[in-house]
Image (cartoon, rainbow, N blue to C red; front, top):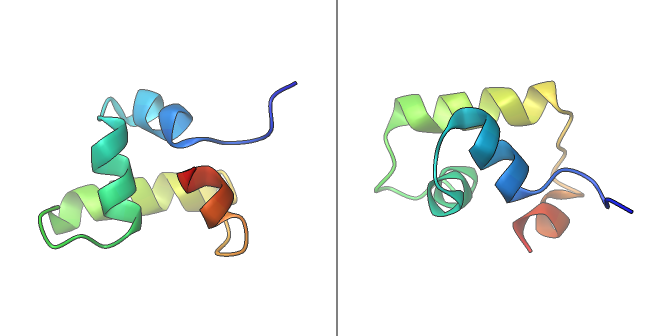
Length: 58
């Protein structure tokens, strides 16, 4: 049984690496603003809240 949205799901949908998605969600300075916005927008669309973000990052 699937436990919810994962970094892998986001990465696959955005055609990005899991590492890039993780860094974008963690506001890493090495990730462009555009990439952070793309990841953030999809995360919001898929209803990712700060309370379940740690689960997704695992």
